[in-house]
Image (cartoon, rainbow, N blue to C red; front, side):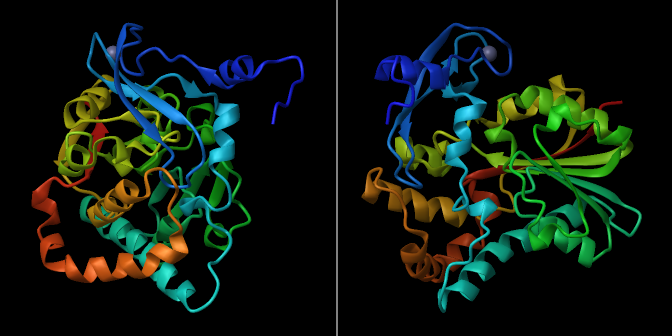
Length: 323
Ligand SMILES: [Zn+2]
């Protein structure tokens, strides 16, 4: 539908998209890297990722403006789900999703001492499952931020919730002992600025945990333009290890530890990579995929025991303020 009768289709397209200088070094000279479709939902469109000629970072350009990306985060978006999938599949689906929150909690507690006085901020908190675990378990003081208003979600009750862009919030000057960004940064429109903001918001001995998909991973080379880590158009930036660590250091952070895995199961990328190859942009029906997903998980269980050594899909850095 053409919303404005005075605009041609092409003009309207160019209004929705913006050309982006490099998200790391600001240079504008680029070369084409890869084209991707919205394999997850099957919405139409072909989105371009480029590589910066100057620093080698891969990112999306042109990209939808902040205003227009919102339609790609509807109530069906997995991290923002309000509606429960009906029927007997519902408990299975919430068990799968809850498994990710359990893994986040385990990983966070490995690196941060979390107790009843710990201030935790989860950036891109979605429906708030991770914060609920830290509130109900160790009794942490929890704050969440998301650009979508999910404050009425039951998992967020008891947490402070901020809506909007991370770097536009000062949290009344509050500092946090633990800041987490679980699959937030690759969606961000200014990831360098978000890293710098996180550095400012940390207490002197606070920890920052960032997990993103890894471009120089096995699934990325296996699945190419159907790699789930491209997740077009939502993913604005594709981090390999080198650029991930480099950007953190440029933001005033020290990388204390690098992990070639994350809380998010690499198996999800194996499954959806195969599914996206077969579906060729037609979109994945979460309800229908659930049983094959669980079956595959059982079959691949012995392989996934070695997930941490296989560099399959994810990466995580644990950072603190550089001294
Ligand atoms: Zn660059």
